[in-house]
Image 1: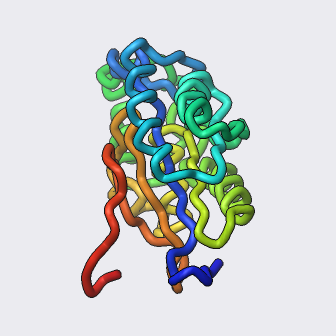
Image 2 (image 1 turned 90 degrees about the vertical axis):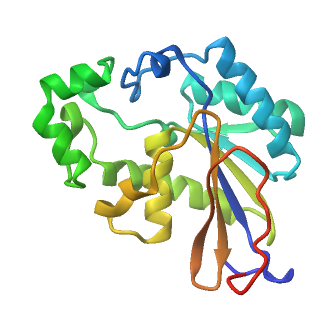
Length: 217
């Protein structure tokens, strides 16, 4: 995808949902459908005001309540309907879901350590990270293809799904995806198209993206 408008290209903003009670309790949510806390709603409203300034052309979101509720705040400001897609849900993690971090490390210590080393692990008997990317990345790309040449897509999803999608779109080997680091609640990462494919422009941001001024532009 190339742009005829000064090389600006298309842009994908991958936005993590706001805070939930399970986030506070450090419980592994996975595909469990947990709602936003009052703080999470306020986080979404604040971030939506910033992201609306980017004048997004489209919004697509996970259908889980915490992502759908976050996306609704941006929809209310922009007037864009949200396309919900279950392929953007968080990783299904089987027996890990609902457990705290301490409970996971106590019961599944070797499995947890292998995952952190970048080995392919079905956490709790659930999905591999590559399987999450297999379902989520094509959805993101399909919506990005519909953008105008310098358009912006906002994708509202979950930390793990966003990380694996970014890794896939950047062409990184799966064992390196963990190096991208996590996203805080209601923060986002920005991908921009370049001559050699997608580039990571912002990661775990909570303010408006700034242009790159310099030799690397």
